[in-house]
Length: 262
Image 1 (cartoon, rainbow, N blue to C red):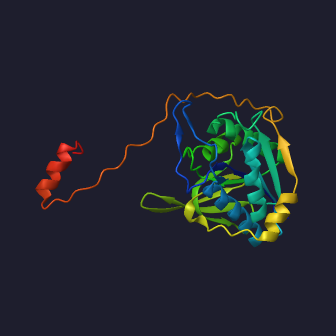
Image 2: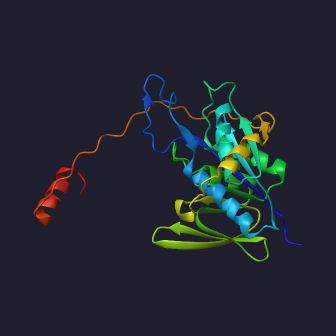
Image 3: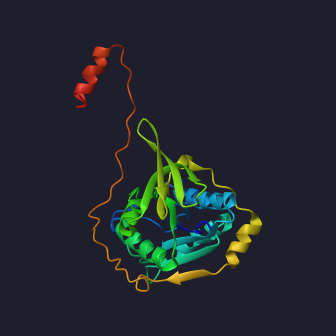
């Protein structure tokens, strides 16, 4: 009897990728009032991959649970994940109200996910390699370390082996691809080229609104999420200046020297 796969897909609510973030200089935070939020693109790919694995291995994948951490509004992304094909959803509430959410760091998020995964008896975690708001690219790796599980990052292809206890992951590295084969349990982080997420059908969107979301607090999971880092200041990157053309290699070298590049 092959092992049953109990998949957890952590997802994050972020400022929509088409929106240019604005800085609130007085509070050293990114302005969020009146801004469109959506499911992090890498997380959407993770949900899609979990659903595809179930479609290919119907008798083995037991369940897919979407999990998010944040304030009350963060539950929106769980509805999106349910519409794509997740079976269940869980929400870890880390704020007393929507106006004053805690600043969650990758370590805190990884600890919360770890506690939830252990509580649920899951053996596969698939999550985006990074969120487009902080670009930390740390949560998956920290989670694997905390759990003591195998990990495969930046996945561009995921395959369940015939024994259903081994996973083969193709990952992109500098200069080519690397193939990683590891046994369950495992943490996989997804890259952009892994898949193209499907459009959720209206029927599935409406059905997702009716599904119950299981709720927890950090206290329920016995995790301290107090911030360890302090943001001293935020500033926008310097505006790019237009390039110039040169006629000879000597002129190019001279300009690079003037700019301190060589």
